[in-house]
Image (cartoon, rainbow, N blue to C red):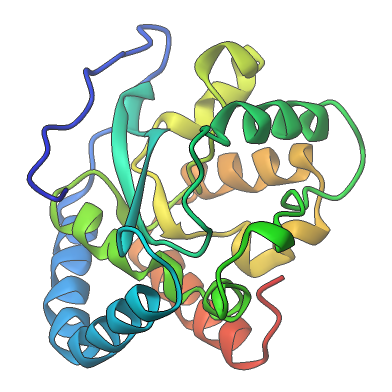
Amino acid sequence: MLLDAPPPLTTAPAILKRATPGWKRAVDLAGVAILMPLLMPLFAAVAVFIKVVSPGPVLFRQRRLGHGGETFWIYKFRTMHVSPVSRDQGHRDYLNRQAGSDAPNRKPDYLADLIPGGQLLRKLSIDELPQLLNVARGEMSLVGPRPDLMQIADYQPVQLRRFEVLPGMTGLWQVSGKNRLTFEQMIELDIRYIENRSLHLDLQILLRTVRVLVQERNE
């Protein structure tokens, strides 16, 4: 799976594509170099666990919009039973309804579709760790706006600013309330991050991410 070619790029010309600062790429590569060896035992354990409790692949991949509106494959540990029908369109429709309301930007309820232990893997964000591969490949950063399943046509013009920078494994939205916030508040935090992007802010967000996970507030 990891050797598959990425999907065709679909760049949205109206989106400004800001260059990634050298310091940011250095932090990303340093983070990958430090975390990957440390996490290898966990990766192996999770892979074996998934294979034991649920038939199907260990990793799950999905097309997401990234830097400049270009698509890429995002990788996760699979936490749901394999379905013969893609859930992507239903998830996209749900996100569009959330975007048009003032309700908290919560994830759809897929509890019945989760594999045993899948809910815990999600709660601890262990399912997101394979995205270190995306970071190593330069498709994502450790910190940035979180990529979702919505497409370019689903966003208002000003909301497309969230694609000016690399998407992140964590970001200002995640450490500021995450799914307790509305879609509009998420966009506002993404834009605030873009306008104030700095080494200090990235390190602050990374530290706050650890605190959120330790305090089990990753809802």
